[in-house]
Length: 106
View 1 (cartoon, rainbow, N blue to C red):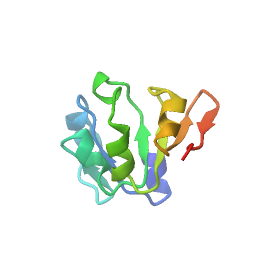
View 2: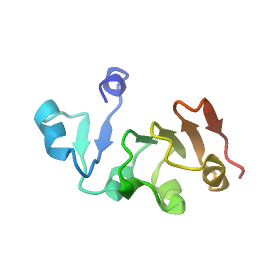
View 3: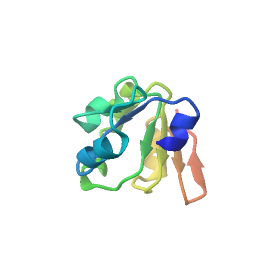
């Protein structure tokens, strides 16, 4: 998040286990919104960045995800998803550490 903030980004974040700790570390910031659900986090977001691999994130509704985010981009730091499946939904997928990026099929 800190690197994103350095570039002027605003972050909407959700982690089912780390919300209190995140609030403790970063406090109240105008460029950080801690969201109550993973779905709420996507509303108005330009992209999705995955930094944790909780089970709750492993089987998203990709159609709803595509509708929610503005730029149809996923940066997956935990390699949770099958790249070819994601491309079928018209999403740009960057699997960090795999050296893999997938452009959408549609």
